[in-house]
Length: 236
Image 1: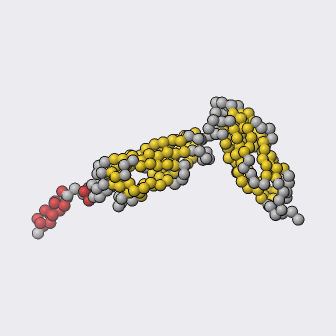
Image 2: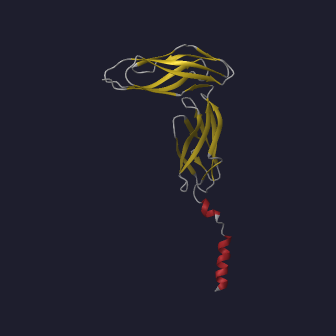
């Protein structure tokens, strides 16, 4: 009796356990997190992921979807045979993004029953040559005034001089100008300037909110977005 049990145990130990784990399609990647490092605003960086089928049935890449419009993904071969590989090509567009650390995701859907959805993570530190402080404007006023001013400063971290030319009209119910445009900013320099808002008086209006686009002659950073909120107290 004991000899029979021993033989059974020996037989079970000789069965390759990996065969049960590899049954069916199995998705695997050379990496699931990609860090682009420092990326200048306006640039688009591209990379590829290698996807491998470590299973024993055909892996089908059913669809891809990205977490936002700034991230694109294109799949290579849809059907990946056992032990075969394919590519997923990604692009990260920094236009319209604010500076700082960014994390975006691409979700890969396949017929792998164990990992039907795999998240690929894209990381980047978006940097700009031109930085405006403060990045957004807010002011509370006791009542309506004709003109509202904000003291600003612009810093140029590049090796070439740049100019702040003016403001694109983006405002509703007001006009915005720069008091001394154009503003020349030398390399690695900081220059103060003032944004002036001319408000249009409208009945029962107690706030002005929107965004402005500062125009520059920088080859990549031709526009700098500034959001604003001006709140008015109710007048008797």
